[in-house]
Image (tube, rainbow, N blue to C red; front, top):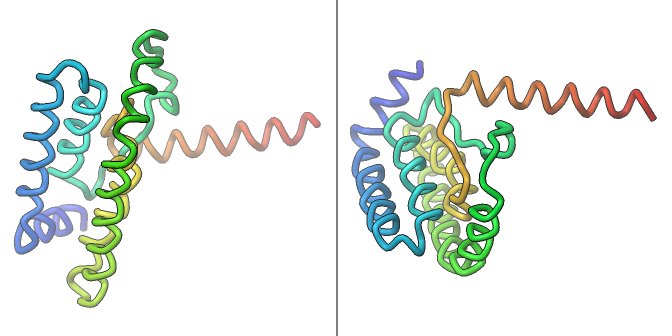
Length: 152
């Protein structure tokens, strides 16, 4: 089913064009060095857009990957400056989702765009992972909530 979804994403909906467009923007932002955190996030998003069915975007903090504190502080500043652009991209994505839901064959593509909305809004420190990894992160988070509720 994932393979069929990926085929539909690429043909007839030209998902590879979306991935290429996001990759080019990400590379340009990485080359500017100033916007490198956003560019790296967009490169991860382009990886997700190549094979969206069976993959997910997760935050590095959810994966408990340790990062440099100075890099995180710089990323926050860059993210604040990027917010208006991310908001516009998210609104465009929502309009695409609404339009795609009018046809039955467009619903899987709308789901892909919906999965990537949070990354359009905030691409900093995001990572493209297999869906099984994202499910395991969610399971561990739920288990932690249960453990904390039981202690109180």
